[in-house]
Image 1 (cartoon, protein in one colour):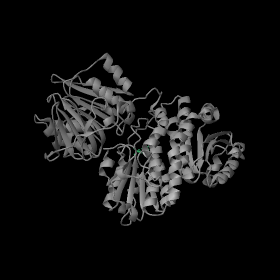
Image 2: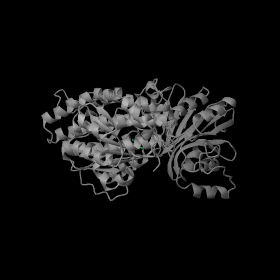
Image 3: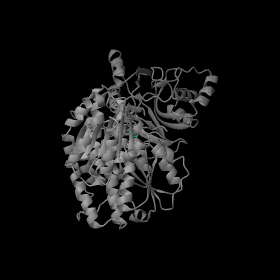
Image 4: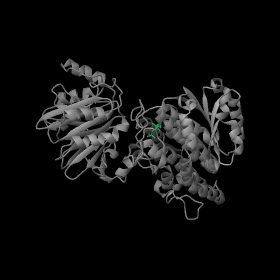
Length: 611
Ligand code: F6R
């Protein structure tokens, strides 16, 4: 959802800001722009399309300076066009603004400004801010910005510069993420810290309602009433290698291959020496809250929501605590009947998803304890939670989530075992069996990754690669895997795909089955394996083409499918950690074979910070 980068210091900031934008391009990529202040002049360059288009323009007509602000856009108001690309400027071309978020009252503010003679040049909600700052400008940029923000309703992260205030970079935040990077006699701003780790790991996370006046050698942070605030400087523990492709053609493929290591990280130090208990000391939540909680509510979006559906099964079957799972954007609009003592678990890779954040806030207002599963530490959701279970997946750059998803599922499995042991609903022997199988999962994921032949065949088989539509079917723990497999395929290859409970297929979707509709059945060894095979027969009887994901040694399944991918055996509750791997690879290779942009699929953004 739009990426912002800024620099102020003794160097020419244009290259630094462009480099940061490259790392943020996953947030939005329909247009980009940059503004630089030099010798009381303001130069701006904007271009439609990916960052490459902006880079090409800057090569033929370079600009230089400091401070510099840059932006990569994911359109909310107005089509992707040069006029709508950021930075936006005032009539005098003196003040430049980059923005992530939505200004709700931009029409009202625009009407007020038009009445004073202001001419608008774009269809965006952002341009109004540049004019509004000019409206209040009396020789002090920071004072004009804080005054203007008092009129603004909505969500924003801003970076602002002016040719009349050289040496000053202004940042402000309300509802959209923004970090300030602290360098040696230089400062940076960015929508997330990944844009800055090449330059500094020391960051300050701006809070809602704060604005910062940033110079090379100092930063002053105020609330919108002008009261001085202090912010702690934190150190980010990610390194640059995590934000690079490391020899893989796409971030998504790199991240798929990182999953054995990610699951090792999720488990590291969290299996107690007795092999039957889970040590989740990093949660920092009084155990009584987990022991006494009558009901758990999981809230998340997209892929994270799929992990929550598996989390429900894990917690209910292992810890015997009732769980409800909601899509975050629905949760906040229902009557929240949360029994006293309820725990709400928001699940999120970015920690910035607006719907999940608002669900968290609604749950807090309703009196629940918030225990989040979050990948990006320091993110808004992490900071607004009572407690956090860190996912430890490292930076995820591919827009289609892969390693963060398996980290979420693994974290839910650990949490379920932890709850079961704390509440006495899981015997030590059963916990020990689960944990010893769990410790072998990373090697089993590696085995799935080493076995790509059948997936590659399917991905180049026209019946799969050129299909207009596909079905993904699974039951029990692997019903959410079916939803996730379908989501991965549709988001990166643009093939319409539906995930269904395999038992539900005969209640409608079977009408779609012909020899033109491929079905992917997720059918590992499980209590429902035989039932799934019956569902496969129903599809075969209608000439449907089937790819099955089954467990090694299941000799019977090949008779019911065109192709079978075998995964190593494991306990059923942990099976989604393996079955999802071939589905990620299938989506990836089909996308590549169809010539799609794997890491930056159309219309999507990695971090969805608007509701
Ligand atoms: C799909 C995908 C999205 C995200 C969703 C939530 O591959 O990545 O569906 O899962 O936008 O994002 P987070 O986890 O950042 O809250």
